[in-house]
Length: 113
Length: 112
Image (cartoon, rainbow over the protein chains, first blue to last red):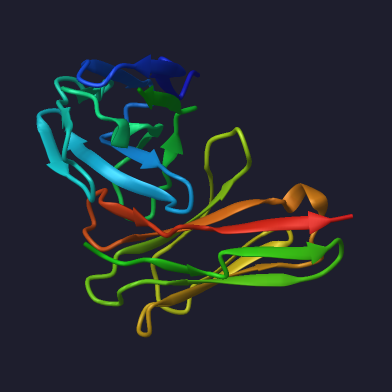
């Protein structure tokens, strides 16, 4: 059971480049979300989804796009990378229900030069 | 945007000490309060998810309480061990559908 799989683990971009961070889960979880982690700021919610075809903005959505065409996949797109997007990104998923815990991927460390 | 606050920001204790942290969250539209343990170079792992006022959860030497009316939760560690060293995160769910907002965490260091 792979759980939540994120790729790549590390990425270096130049300002203005675009890229997609991949996230896949094999637990048939309805809920998926993307967080970024910056020193002293904990995890901040970027975008989240409650099912295929349904996404919504979190705390810090600017500069990021998401889509959810399948239950398994929830990619995060940076359209034009900026140095402020240098961070560690975590994807998480959980099943529907208010008392259900999050399962996290292993993270993607992104540097934008 | 909700504001979830944790205190203290960091804590250094000796092995064997008992300690506790606080998580405060908006009490309106409350659905659930989560606690996660996050070790360096790993991913956060769930400790507890609590939904009811007065709820108490326990896992080994770690326990948590919840007060939804006043908007706070305590996490307790009894007899801290060096392997308890980690960042402890809390997150508030005020939407009921996956919009979990995290606090900045409490970083615990347990010294032998």
